[in-house]
Image (cartoon, rainbow, N blue to C red; front, top):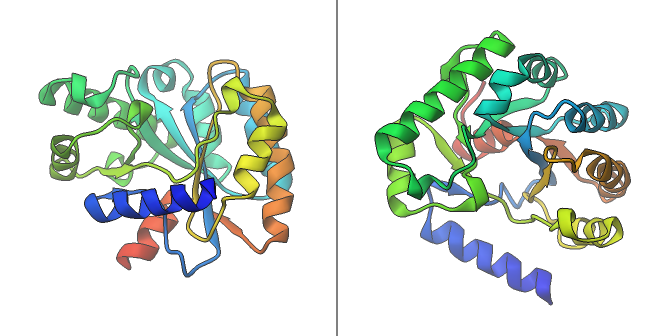
Length: 225
């Protein structure tokens, strides 16, 4: 019942904000596992180890200040085949930043990621706003600057509840196109790595393929890498 209500709510949001990605193509059994708030020197390696164990790729929405502090971790994320993306520079809701400051911070963070990974900054386009807060103006500005706003349709509150609850809240509502959010920073790594280790085999058994946000975006737009 709750899962059906949430799916309906996200469909409504997707229609109201067509420039924002809440979920992918519902005709494909592809889902995206995403991580916010990294990189973190203790948490991120634990998550990367579990992803490597199950041979899947994910998307990491990174905090610029942490990218500048731990560039080798960002490089490791990229070298392991995962997509580096932008979360923010200092984890303040975008609507509270003035436009010039926000653009400067996003561009600075993107440049830091690109430098760590050895890629062009312009290839880093996907942005997830802190706390999921955005306005129509936020969407307009990000589009103008060449960024794409990414939200989600499944973000269990793993940081305040037992892992078993989170596992259930990932497995039960996941449908084709789902975008799942967990966090690999702020001390959540050990718990999150156990959760990821548990849910990946179950979702694979249900016929889901794990893809990156970039893959989902390209599937929707018809772009090729």
